Image 1 (cartoon, rainbow, N blue to C red):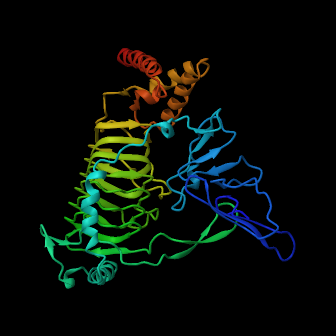
Image 2 (image 1 turned 180 degrees about the vertical axis):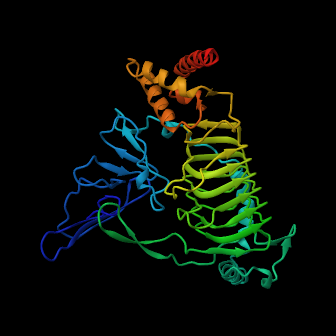
Image 3 (image 1 turned 90 degrees about the horizontal axis):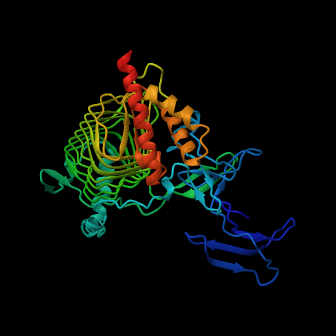
Length: 457
């Protein structure tokens, strides 16, 4: 008997009245951490931990779900996602990666092999957050937490609760949702027609309506829904905002410094609903991994010293500044799934000069009004001329890394809007310094030739 991930959970006897013979449990590393054997009749079970969901259709290439990506045994290169399959349930989108010669998993984009980035401030906030949350765990604290929870969901404000204030904001620092029982939900298994019953990590807690300025620093907000919320001058610094869902909401002059936004879903894909707006918001030092942002607008926002990885933004950006790591991220100029008359997602007055752009795609976005990084990056200002020439010269090159550069440039050409492309030099060289130097010189020579040709014409 397999579990949802294909692991062998139990062995049963054949017949109309089967009997359990063996049962197994596994830890997060795939090791058997518990087992049970019947008094008699147990059998040898050579297959145990699998750690994946076989999600492909019968007869198609076998695809195994590894969370953020899907792995194909037979694919020899990464593939772009099928955008027709993007919806609220499978974003951020999967990518296909291949197995290497040693049986491990590798990616032609290389991002799986780089060391994990350290989230700025992680060690510094742990003691403060623990102390702030302790006060919500006493009987009096839990009673107040229930009242806060109900008031947040009702959208009537918090003034009736006589909360203390800190720096002019209602003091909800370290707030924890008081619910103990998990919510039971039925989840469909992709492409199988089956569903399984799971215990969700938390109850869905809702923040709705216009709120007074609040200080939710260090709060446990994982899994919260922000629905039609209106927040001005509020503070969420160092809070846990994993798995949050934000739709038809606005945040003005708010601070989200040092916040963990892993698996956040912002904006929603219902384009008939109002756009979620972040205006004059500070995201400094925050961590955004597997974030999907659609139908959202970021205006005059600061993304200083951030870590943004494996995420996608089908959103507008105006007068925003980025520094830190932006890795394996797609910015979409054409809103995904939006009506044809929907305005494009433009970038105006956006400054990436302090950011490291690793494997970043700007799909159908004009980069002319964008300040791009120079150090360690290759910026092509005549990309419509350079890219076809480079692709033609690289397609039959005997070196795999150079053919790989050609594939990267093909992707950039398909995404091109305007005449500017930016690449990190190590992406162009597949993390090899010698190849990076060659790629940089190769592209700059073509850039010079195209620039001279443009002047002559």
